[in-house]
Amino acid sequence: MQALRTQTTLRPAAITGVGAYRPSRVVPNDELVEAIDSSDEWIQQRTGIVERRWATEEDTTLSMATAAAREALEAAGITGEQIGAVVVATVSNPMRTPGVAPMLAAELGSQAPAFDLSAACAGYCHGIALANDMVGAGTADHVLVVGVEYLSQFTDLSDRGTAFLFADAAGAAVVSLAEASGISPTVWGSDGSQWELIRTREDGMLTMTGNSVFRWAVWEMAKVARRAMEAAGVTAEELDVFIPHQANARITAEMVKQLKLPESVRVADDIRHTGNTSAASVPVATARMLAEGQARSGDIALQFGFGAGLVYAAQVVRLP
Image 1 (cartoon, helix red, strand yellow):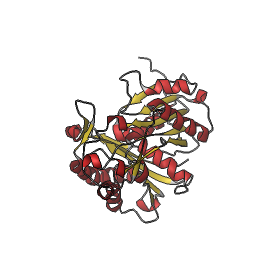
Image 2 (tube, one colour):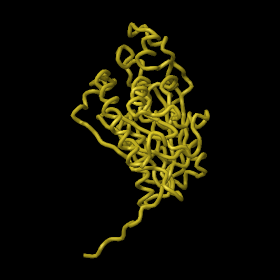
Image 3 (tube, one colour):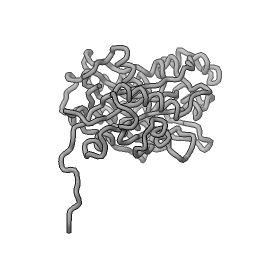
Image 4 (cartoon, helix red, strand yellow):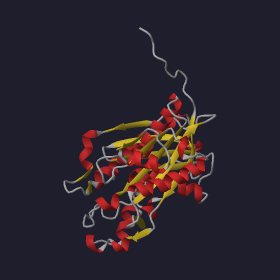
C-alpha cells in the first residue's frame, strides 16, 4: 500500500503576539449585593473580586473577539490574510450556529479554516495546544487563538453563588512558526463524572457548586500544574510568571502554596478588577501583565485553565 505524504519533523512554534478587549462598563460589587443579601466585603473575602467588566449595548461576542484579535495581529506583525487558521474558545456564543470563528475570520479579511471549541475556562489553553500542533505539523504558519466570553447574559443576579463571579472580555494570541519552540507539551484532560458541578440550568443560566469546585481546583489542579512544568523541563525556580485561570483569588493563592512558587514569580491577579471571564481570562491577564510591566517579553510563564466539564489544560510558554 502506498504511503501518503505527511509531515515527519515537527516545526517549532511560539506565541508572537497577544491582545485583549475589556468592555467599558465597570460593575462594582455594590451594584450586586442587594439582590443576593450580601456585601462588598463578603464578596472580596470569598473571591478577591472588587469589580468586573460587563458588555455594553454596543458589545457582542463577535465585536469583542474582533477587537482582541486585531490587537494580537498587530503585536505579531501580521495581517488577517496571513492567518492559517482561526480557533475561538467560547461557551457564550448567542447562536447555536454558526460559530464565532468563521465570522471573526471574515472580519479580519481571512478565509482560513475557522472553528469554535467549547472547553469553558480551559478553552484558551486548549486552543494554544491545537495551534502549537497545527504549526508544528505544517498545517499553518500562523494560527489565531481567541478566548471570548459574554457571560453576563447567562448570569442569574439573584444566585448568591454566581451573581458576582462572571464577566465579559476577549483575549487573543497569535501562534506562529518560530526559530525555537516557545510552547511546551500541554498537559490536559477531563473528569466528566463531575459535570454537574459547573453547568447551565434549564433556563440557560449558569450554576455552580462552589465548595466542590474550590477543592477540586486547589488539590487536583496543582498536580496538573506540576506535570506541566515537568513536561516543559522547568522548575518552579525557573518560572518568571504564573498565569492561572482567573476564577478566584483564594484558589490562586492556594495553588501558589501547593506549587511552592518563589516570591520572584509574578502571579496574575486579573480577577480583582476583571472578574471571571472563563476562556478569556488567561489571555486577558497575559495582555495586562505585559502592558503594565508585570511580565516581560521572553519571560517563561506557566499558564493554566480549568473549569466546567470538568476540563483542564496547562502549558509553559515563552511570552512574546
